Amino acid sequence: MKINQELSDKYAIGISLLCTFNCLFLPSILILSSSYLAAQIDTELVHGLILLIAIPLSIFALSLGLKNHNEKSVFFLGLFGLSLMAGGFLFGSIVGEFGEKFLTFFGSLVVVFAHYKNYKACRAQDCDCHDKTAI
Image (cartoon, rainbow, N blue to C red; front, top):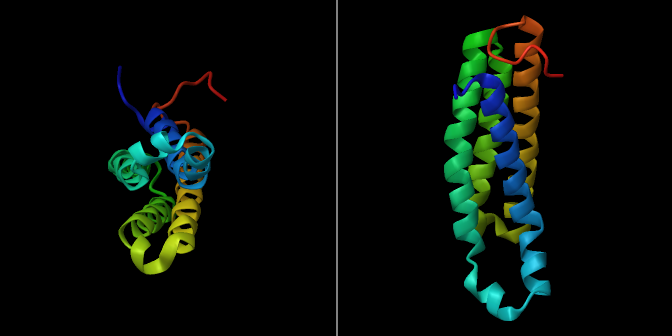
């Protein structure tokens, strides 16, 4: 299977949404579950692992988009969102829990929006990197 811009954008959107889910809902789920489960899951580790997947995948998809349609603003918007997500992870102890969640959540939304714009720009160019029958 060839990994193209469309597929990598979709995967990157999913990973960014997973990061948002982890940040916003996993702590609540752990609190509502047994305390044993809550003690076993390191949410910072999960956040870091998601970022390890999200950053290279997003950069790959956005780079393909830049090559296909040359929309620099979309590329840099995605990098800005990734920077916010990484900043939330790296500086969470400095900005506090609210700051970490805000940076991660807002960064994830920016990344999702950038990948959506990347996908739409590719479709508008009618390049051969996507399925012609997909909507």
